Structure formats: C-alpha cells, structure tokens
Amino acid sequence: MGWRWDFAIEILPKMAVATFNTILAAGVGYAIALVVGLFFLLGQRTPSKIINWINREIVEFIRSTPLLIQLFFVYFVLPQFGITLSAWVCGMITIGLHFGTYLSEVYRGALEGVSKTQWEACRALNFSTLYTYRRIVLPQAFPIAIPGMGNYLVGIFKDTPLLSTIGVAELFHAATAVGGYNYRYLEPYTIVGVIFLTLSIPAAMWVRKLEKDVNKAQGKIKK
Amino acid sequence: MTYFEFLNEHGVTLLLGTVTTIKVLVCSMMLYVIISMIFGLMRLSKNLLIQGIATVYIEFFRGTSLLVQLFWAYYVLPFFGISLEAFTAGVVALGLNFGAYGAEIVRAGILAVPRGQWEAAHALNFTPAKRIKRIIIPQIFPIILPPAANLTVELLKATALVALVTVVDLTFEAKQINSITWLSAQCFGTALLIYYIMARFALVPFLRWLEVLAARKVGKEKI
Image (cartoon, rainbow over all chains, first blue to last red; front, top):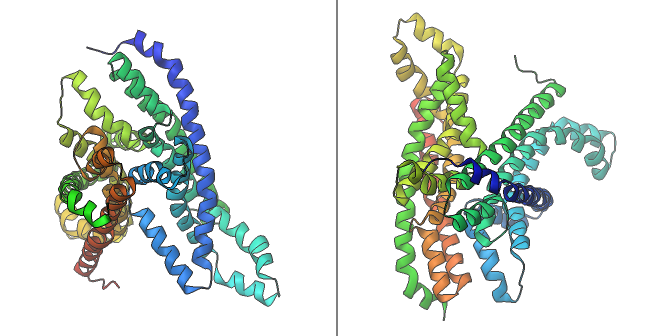
C-alpha cells in the first residue's frame, strides 16, 4: 500500500479549510496568552509578598503539568460546576492560561533586561512611574521580548493539534476524521506534517531574523 | 463519593499509570540525550553532507508538531511494514522530537566553550577524539544542563501525549477512570497533582543536583 495521489488530492480541500481553523486557534490562543501573561507579570511585580508567592506557585503548577490534562480538566470539570463551554472556548482558555505563564517569564526577562540606571535617571528627572514605564522602560523592553514572544507563537501553533482531543475541528482533527472514514492514515497525517512544516519553518526563520534585527538595533552585533 | 473513597478505589490504577509514565520518561530521556549529542556534534561538522543531514533532521522535527509525529510513528509506519508497539512508538517519537531540540542546546554548548581550550588541546597534541572526550565534553555540561533541565521538564509533560496512541500511562488511566465514573475533577485533578509532584519534587531536584555535580567537576562552585 503506497502513497495514493488521487486520495491525497481528494482530501486536500478539506485539509485546507481545517488549516484555517488551526491558524485561527493559534492566533486567538496567542492573543489570550499575551494578555494572561500580563496579569501574571502584574502578580509578580506587586509589592505584596503573599500575592507574589501565590502567583509564583500558580505559574509553577501550570508550567509543570501537561497541557493535555489541563485541557481535559477545563473541558470536563467546568460543566460539573454548571459552566458549560464549547470545546473551542475551553481550548482557547487553556492554551491562553498555559502559554500565559511562559509569556509572563518572557515579559519579566525583558523588563529586567532594561538597565537599572534607566530607572534611576527617570527618578532623577522626577518622572512618574507610569510615565517611566510608558516612555522609557517599555520601548526598551519590547524589542528584548520580541524573540521570546515569537518563539511561543510558533510553540502555540505546534500545540494546537492537542485541541483535537476535546473535539475542536482543527487540522489534526480533520486528518483523523478523514483517515478514520477512509481507513487510510498515510496521506492525511503526512499532509498535516507537510502543512505544519511549510507554516512553521518560515515562521521560525522570521523569528530568528527578528532576533538578529533586534540585536543589531540594540548595538549587540555578533561577530 | 468523597475524595478518599475515590483514591481508595482508583488510586492503585493511577499509580500503575504513573509507573508507565516514569518508564516512558526514562526511556525517552536516554534516547533524546544520545540523539542530541550525536546530532549536536554533526551540526558542527565541517563535512557539508553530515551538517546538512543534521540540519534537515533538526528542522523537520522542530517544525512539525509532536502529536503529528507520534501519530505518524504509530498509525502510518505500519503502511511501510514497520509496526511498532505503542510504547516503542511513543518513546521513539518523543526521543526524536526532543533530540532535535537537544541537539541545538548541545551545539550552542560546544560553541560556548572558549576557543583557547580547543587550541590548547591541539597544542598538547591530543587526538581529536580525546580532545572532545577529555577537554570539551566535561566543560559543556555546566553550560548545557540548565537549558537541558527545562527541556526535560517539557519532556515529562509531553509524555502525556503517548496516552493518545494507547499507551496505558497516567493520562490514559485518568481518562479511562473519567469515562467510567464521570468524576472529572477528581481524576484529572489527581493526575495534574501527580505530574506536578513528579516535576517539582523529583525531576527538578534531580536535575539541579546534576547541575551542581557538573559545575563542581570543572571546578566551578555553583549556588
């Protein structure tokens, strides 16, 4: 049983539609993760020691448990408390929470990457904290955060197939459905692999280029 | 049903699943360490063919999703006459996937060893093999272990995916119990806790210990 082109071409339109769903899921999940990361960052930087500690434990817990079980947990447990959400919403919430913890670390690293003297200079110039963040610190921190943020965008994209386990109709789900219906898994799964490659390798290259540009703009050109 | 009754009835099943998870973790860990060493070195080879093979391998496995690779190994390889057992397929897919990430860590680690060390080893007339084995490798461990530790925690989380190719691990058992009892909060909550405990109180301390050991070996007292 070799590769069958006619079958591959026959299922291609279906896969293309599902690819759109995968990209949508990755995009929405990423947008949520970006915001959630900000909240975790806030929890980390508040002066209250107790909030810092709680925040850190939550982040540690989310980061050291599998996304798959978190998905199951959100999908199966919330209905027990009377909250019934669609698979899509559950998936987006879980991905947002999971990768939000990673992004908060990226943000933290970027903020710490801004030299302390910048803060001192702003203090000396009598800038308010808000003004310092807005005009001095964030513009410098953002370029540092870009590579990390890009990496997690690619990371989320590659983790979207997990959503198929709770029934989100994305690319991998479509491949399994098509494969099960025709009892041929070779073509669907291979096409999924190829689609992932063609999307994520350029994305990863783009992130690497961004990283280089950022380093250059910051005057840290590698020899 | 109280939580204790739940544990009384299903605790043993979950623990048995945990044992399988640990088996998967240990096997795939060994595999990925070996693969990353080999491909990390190949990536730095002056021979363009060897370097090209390593680059293609790394880009391929980093560019596609782990779940896709896993399903490919389990459902598609039989089309080519290679039928792997679920456990083997899981370990191989995990090892190959994480080996690709590990190879990049090894490559960066080798590049981080100061040039002078190579030159000194050369000047002392060490053979190339001895240079790598006695001079370079002991020095790369303190450099590569911290990122490798992160990767290994990711590996533990990723082992949950093998449940989807019917390996009876912790995730599989939790899902199974869930479908019998519908006590979702209890079974997925317990599974999350077990993963958390494994990561936070067993795997991470072990990896920290390795880091300290490696640092001490090259005379760097760390922490």
